[in-house]
Image 1 (cartoon, helix red, strand yellow):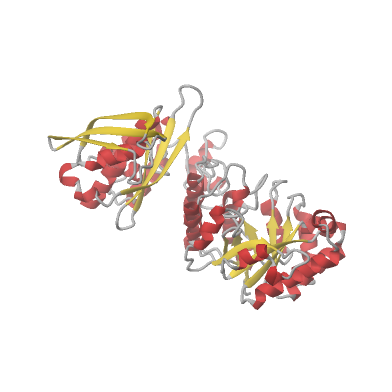
Image 2 (cartoon, rainbow, N blue to C red):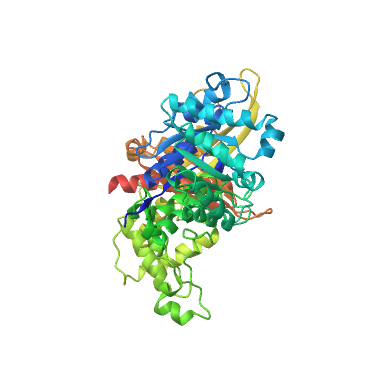
Length: 537
C-alpha cells in the first residue's frame, strides 16, 4: 500500500513571534529557517513583509533554502480596490517568495462585524487575491481564519469561502482553529465534510493549543483527510501556543498507525537532530527548555527509582514508548551511575575524545559535570566548555595560557561633542610559558559606539597572547546570552557565548557566577582555550 504524503508547514517565524516575550532578531530568523530547512520541512513561513522592520529586513536578506519552500504571509485584498492596487498585498507580493499564504475571514460574524463588508464582497476579496497570486506564478495558500467557528455558525458560507480560494487556484486551503476552542472530535467531523468537497491533498490544518489539544486536533484532521499540517517549534504561538511540530513530527514518523499510513519529507536519519533543534530555539530565546516536553525534554526519558526500580534496572525501555536516541535525547536513570557513564562516553566520542568504559576517571568527571550543572552550568548548550572539562579530567588539557588577573571599570562621561556616554575599560594579565603579558582595551568600536564590558574584556584577552596571537586572530564573538538562574540579591548568572572563526566554525562556552562580568570572562577564557585546543589537534 502506498503511503499518503503529508506536507509540514512551519510558522514559527510568524505565529511563534506572537508569543508573549518572544522577539526574534533577523539573525535569529535566519538561523531558525536554515535549521528547519535542514530538518526537512516542506514550507518555512518567514513572516509578514512590511508588518515590521525586522520582517522587512529578513525578507530583503532572506536565507537560501535548499529544500523548503520559502513563504510570505499576508492578508487578502481589502474591499474597494483591486488586488493589483492593494498596497498591503503588494508588500507581500514584492517579497518575491515562491509561495504566499493569505489569511481571510470565513466566519460570517467577523466578515460583517470586524471587516464591515458584505459576505459577497468577502468572497470576491478571497477569489481576486488568490487569482492575482496565481497569475504572478506564485504558489497560493489560503488560511481560513476562524473556520471551525464559522462552519458551526454558518456551514454553507464557510464552505463557500473555501470554494472561492480553491477554485481561484489555491494550492492549499487551510482550516484554522483560530481561538483554539474546537476539540479533536469536532475537528475530525468538520474536516471530513471539507474533504468530501475539496480533495484532501489540497486541505491543511492549523490548530491552536488553548484546550491543550492542538496536536491531537491536527492528527484528527489528518485522519479525516487533510494532508498539510501547520505548526511551530516547541508549540510557540499567541496565548497558549500552536500545534507543536516537535511533538507531531516524531509521532508521525515513529508511531502507529501514522508511520504505516503516511510519509513526510523528513527522513528517519534527520529525527535525532530534533532535540538539538528544540533546545537551539530555547537558547536563541534565552528561555529554559521545558524539562518535561514530550520526546525532547531532559526528563522525557528519566526513570526515577521507586515502585518500578527493579524493572528500570533490568529494562528501562519498559517505560519508554520510543527509544530516546531516535529523537536525539537520552535515557536518565538517577539511581544508576551506569546510565550517566554511557551518556558521558557517547558525548566524549562525539567530541573526538577517546576513553575506555572502565576508566576510573570517568566517575570523577561525571560527578563534576553533575555538580557544575547543579551550580547552573549547562553543558548541553556549551559543548566547547564540556570538552575542556573532559580533557582536564582525563589529563588531556594543555595549558596554553593562564589568566593571572583581570579588571573592568565602567565610566559614564561626556564625549568630545558633549554627549553622555558609558565606556568600559578592561585590563587582563596573562602568563604564557612564564612570560607575562598585560593588555588593556576599551569598549568603544571604531565608530565610537559603546559595546559593553564583555566586549572590552574580549578585546583585552585576545590582544596579546604572545605566540598564540595568530591562532586567534580570526576569532570573533557572535552571540551573548545571559540568564538569571535565581532571584534576590544572591542571584546566580549564567552566560553563554557563541564564537566563530574565519573557517565558519562555531562553538559555545559557558560561565556561571553571581557576578555577570566574572561569568562572562569564564566563558571568554573557555572560548579562546577551545579554539587553541581544536587548532592544535
